Length: 481
Image (cartoon, rainbow, N blue to C red; front, side, top):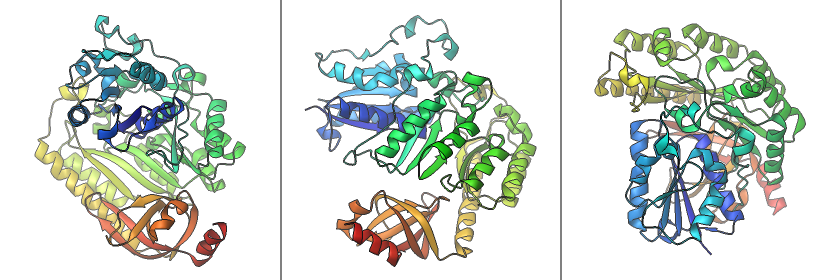
């Protein structure tokens, strides 16, 4: 039996793709490899959002090919789609599969494995005409419709190395925004959405497989449904899932601040299954920089979003992506952003010093910010984020958390103990010490926990609760064994 290994880099949509490829390979009779040394085929699911991400993806392929020269190493994802000719030149590569054919990647890989190995790398699927394209603009390519080219729900067995208690369900593919720093529309094409009934069927299939939490993801889920109706349908989809399925927990992926509507907030207030948690693709707060980025909102839109959230009874966890040192960002621009962020009510910032991506308009903008300045500004916002998270933990009034979904074993703050981690509905991370033999049985369970203290991981900027199972939850779990 052939053994496979899937290595994914990048965004949640890419992780959803990677899990779905793995599910397809399992259906085709392949088995997961214990390590890269044990694999007959290794799939690198690449990211190309920045030049650095592109380099990391290609380096991972080279390293894996060097470790296991007998394996067929296949390159897929956005890096393969944006520049397949370059991908074919990576040392050690066996084949390339573009994003256009990702929906049938498992079948293409399975067929490739039964063929005699070629000396030269090959392109699998229908993208062999890339070299003849006069333009690399995504609209010039034959992109499949969402329903035709969609990858199925990633329903993985528990023994799979990529099994997750939180399932990332891709509801939408592609983007029409063309932000000046972003190459992804070229890697994933124009916006295409699954139909609402298709999404509901996939949610139900995940529920039947034992999944308790689904995270809706995509390239730009704020554009969900625009290709069907001419307007976003993300609120309609959320309401349909919340009212027509028995899903226990629903999260929504990254959204722009203006895409989080009053109706969405009302759904969150009215439905306990809708986890109070937003990940906001903020990128910046200042209108001039947002215009240079070609974002669709201004500083007023940012402040209006926080004004809408301020009146909620179920206070959501708000995480945000922010870029420092974008071309043209002055000391005054950064200071204004830092001051505004200090005044707004949020939980965590994921900070990225601007990183160029070849082929994007941002590389041609004047006013380049030195890399050292980008990094220094990023450190200041990272410090602000850590201070905010520790202050919120220190000021917590509750000594317990309900409905924590335990996900899997992790390394805890004390190396001599076994730990399992999980998240509450409002995205508070919890570490629970357990007996080693109990970890697998506790995985994918919703439990109540008693909070003891909190710890800081300064490398990741994450703050976690140290907790223990509540007595009644422990007794209920024992009774089920």
